Image 1 (cartoon, rainbow, N blue to C red):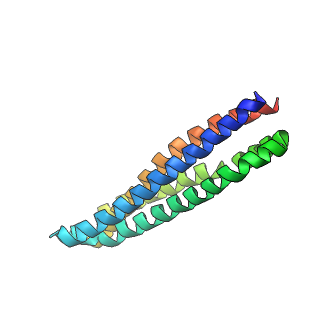
Image 2: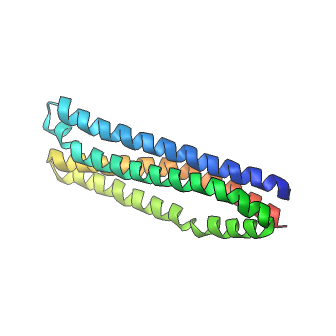
Length: 167
């Protein structure tokens, strides 16, 4: 089982790299969508989407690029660390995976707050700019939930493999 462990680690990292790539692409498409709404839209609501979509896109692009770079680096030195002391490597991985589990809870809370804020903005205002802000909140929250849904699933699978390897 211990020899197979690094295969799981590699799969985990490659999954993170794929996720980072998709997040970056989503961010860039969102930025482009914001500019297209602004440039081609004729209604005030379409023009108002520029900032919320660009800001959301920039945030997601930055997250994706950061994840991509850090996981590419990780792929290189993980193999060295694993070959030097596989048991110590597995223990460090256990702590690392355990240490970011709280972020999944935070993302669900943030999404809930953003969805509620969107509803309030749509119910109590008539301004296109505030509706656009609500749409930006919803897009940010919804895409974050989708990303974390798959990330949490991969993390749970990897954590089970870590526990099995430590037996």
